[in-house]
Amino acid sequence: MEKLIYEGKAKQMWTTADEDVLRVVYMDQATALNGKKKDQIYGKGVLNNQISSLIFEYLAQKGIENHFIKKVSPTEELVKKVKILPLEMVTRNVAAGHFATRFGVEEGKKFQTPVEETYFKSDKLDDPFMNDSQILALKIATKEEIEKMWSISRKVNQLLTDLFAKMDLKLIDFKLEFGKLKNGQIVLADEFSPDNCRLWNISDNAHMDKDVYRRDIGNLTTVYEEVLKRLKRVLMEE
Ligand code: C5P
Image 1: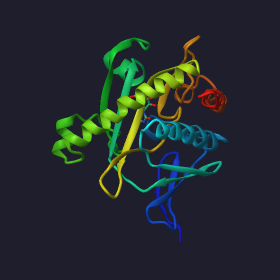
Image 2: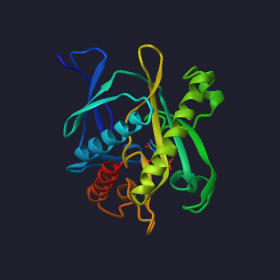
Image 3: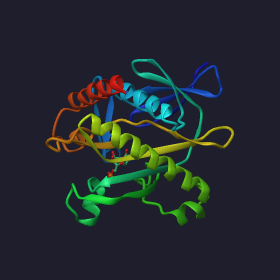
């Protein structure tokens, strides 16, 4: 019998007959401000599943090992069971969002070297910033594991910055999550979609990501559909 083992803000995770495999269900739900703003958005689950599946397949082809196995329905995918590390690894190529507000800089300033930040995943605590010594003190990950996660994040940044550029999009920033397989190997997990990255149109800097919902400046499904359309076009040409 399949059991619901986790329900997040936009996804559910179910067990399957194979103890090493989980089924992810993408829901039609958008949240912002750590769940304080919440809406049902018809069609969002299908879009996130499609975009994330294509990106995880692309990353796997390029040598980035991740939990994705296959998409099994418009809103569902199978993934390898991993133990998620309670960390959000954020990479920023350009100042935006909380970096801009926290340090009082304008959105759009490009960094010479990408900024790397880690947050402790906890809805209850509002995902506080966490530095390496805090991660080590709480034994959340080892030094080697932290280095491994950043090394994968840097490769993902390079691959996706190039891929999105072909889609006329700038990859401004993104958040990754990692998990450990049974054998201890760290792999990329969670999802990659406009929910967890910022994408700006190269031509006019228009927001093509969840900021349209967070800031009430556009229609989320229209924007995600456009990202998916461009992604499919570029992947066909690859
Ligand atoms: O809000 P902030 O500017 O710190 O977000 C940086 C990047 O991390 C954005 O792309 C955002 O979508 C992503 N993020 C996320 N989940 C969070 C916090 C941030 O996907 N809980």
